[in-house]
Image 1 (cartoon, one colour):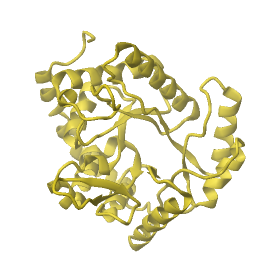
Image 2 (tube, rainbow, N blue to C red):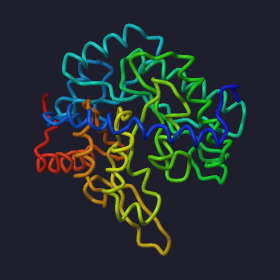
Image 3 (cartoon, rainbow, N blue to C red):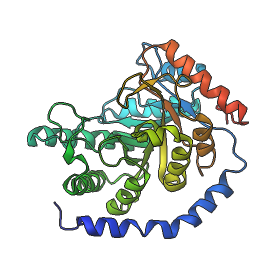
Image 4 (cartoon, one colour):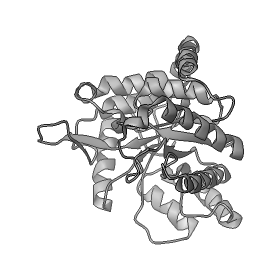
Length: 319
């Protein structure tokens, strides 16, 4: 652990200071967003091509104005420039570069390699000018990289997460992108208050929030009142949110609490609250569909989200 790491007691104490500054930020959000009723939607495309122009055009054909980063190596400068040029020409932003490896792997060598990979992905996000590079904090589970483990909410886990975020940001020194992690149902951070603590502890301007509201729904109370939970996430984390994921959750008929991801519109997630939260942000934070299998499933989810948006007077079309 680095010498500037926070103890558990310091971590909790320092986190409380955020709320003092928050009301002013919230007022700024209301002032800057009240006239903006256009948002960015994005998701995977099902086009076989390496041509950045073809890929960018495929997004616009689906009314997407945000994209996951196309395949490219951080060292391939000519392709990176082509992606930037062609996507910008069509008004499509790069929402995120995914890392999706275990920064907490209990195997030291695997953990070292994973951290090196995340650093490469953050460097790629910076080169592309993506809104963020995103991962989860990780897991101490030796078999499943995001799996549950009692130590995943321990002081040690929290302190190492702070250290990992700082080390990545300090190594890359991003100016155009942010490093983010997602909240998870059973791994820190599990909710908006946890994430506020993390923001304060990491203490880097390049650290931000990637919001996946489905990952916060880890109890019956949160699921039953998910609209209120979504509003809480935006109220507390809004100034730091740079990208969001679009999914839905459906109860399984089982004696224990069991939730399954489904196509948006087939579950219980309050998309009115989700879209209203996005509209209140000071910038056009993208909403990215994920975890579906086919183009048809993505079309169904996209059309549902667009219908909800229209009912609120919000468009995902051209700015």
